[in-house]
Image 1 (tube, helix red, strand yellow):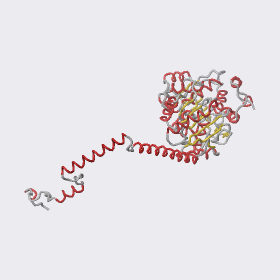
Image 2 (cartoon, rainbow, N blue to C red; image 1 turned 90 degrees about the vertical axis):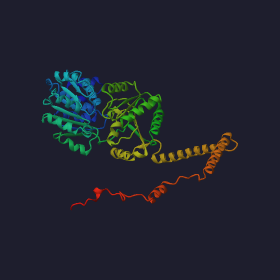
Image 3 (spheres, helix red, strand yellow; image 1 turned 45 degrees about the vertical axis):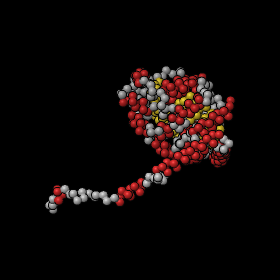
Image 4 (cartoon, helix red, strand yellow; image 1 turned 120 degrees about the vertical axis):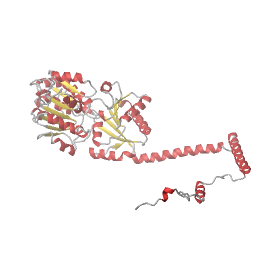
Length: 473
């Protein structure tokens, strides 16, 4: 099957051919005909299989008829992160080069004024994150009554990241007769139930089992100690061991603070590294991604902001410095490598505290991940041997210290003389004062002696006169 068999327009086919693609991927072949027919689509496929083109190409074909009006976009695409939104815009520019379409990108970290100017000109395609979209709507700069196609990309992430109230509100602002397209790599049952209120009789296009990983990605678990410096040392050894096979790599951490710490550590050890996390301003994030795409950076330390949908085709390795707490995130993370049929490698550092996360990952993907050089049981043996080695080094140091304190050592002789003089001074003081060295009674004894005193209780015999006045009852 070729793209010409899917019913796409000639302009779109020409742009696809110029991009070097001839045959659609399974998700594209399954979703594009239904999207062109105006049906709601729920698409599930492995990451890196071309889900973005599955909705971009049919939308371009349908947008060839008609024009947008000011502040009333014709189509709306919702993305969970700014990077994904910017990447979708790039796809529309690439595949829509034969169309004269106005594309507006509404994301945070960018001036409102420039975005409002694009909305005033009329947007055929509106790509946005939910928060910034609602900001423009509340300002009165945006009307959603003209939206014909709604796309929710990375649907599970959108619904699982706390965007449910925003998505529900946006869907109420869009005509009920719209066409809705959902695309994601994972679709848990609880999330599928939520999609029922957004989709009307959807066509489910599932080209692979949900939450499966590509077979061209070599996955390995790597044992390491619990200490942060143990993990950083293990990571550096992994990077060095891969040698020339490591063209570039993304290193994932669970926390933004860990991203900054690991980045500084790699730079300090003279590795070519950059950092990417959600607290960075938008210009710095886009610049960092662009440098990584162009090969100016070899290692990119990132949070999960880079785990979803980012298309960087030539990533050779993925390292999970921290194992993800949600098993679905593991599928998305390692999906950054092995894209477009290329081979990739994914290494995940595992500590003894990560057992439950490791088990949930293997349960989700339906396979046991191989260990690189022994599992956690061998790690325990290694720790025992290293502990014994440390004890041996400590005992040898103590032996040396003991030997150094022998009478033959001048320092030991001086130390013993000082100690003897201190003892003589103490005994002399005790004899002069005529009392034992520990003459001060204990606190309990002092307290008891105070209690035995014949102290006055209350007023004693001197009772004030006003206290003797009888009380009327």
